[in-house]
Image (tube, rainbow, N blue to C red; front, side, top):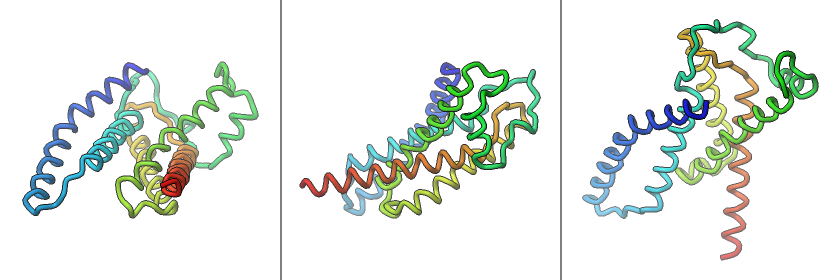
Length: 191
């Protein structure tokens, strides 16, 4: 699984990074002609954000792995918030060895997946210094990912679609945003 994710990250990066570099190069040439300053730290933050988005897409959207042997079922779609999470943590899921461990990894993984988004959004644009704006964008991005996963099921992907993922992803972005705000406030107070 890790090898497949690594391959999809490399594939997406190789496909999109040259376009990213060309776009940023053109923007910076235009800025230079207008005598606007080019900040290397800003370019580094934007490149980091771009690579994070590539990583996020590779993990959640790229249709790997696919299986012709497993037919997606309606059991893999959860539209009832929190109920499956509670059941998973309280009851031992049938047929899954170490079920609670899997549940905890799923919960923490979904939170950790969007944690960087909550940090990077305020760095990329001041408009996202509000936790509410980060919350809304994180919810929209996560919902979009789940929708794409639902559509990809028609093409053989066996990804599950879960409203809890949207909630956990959004929570992770909010935690990242709050943590970033605390660090930023502490750093500015110490100057």
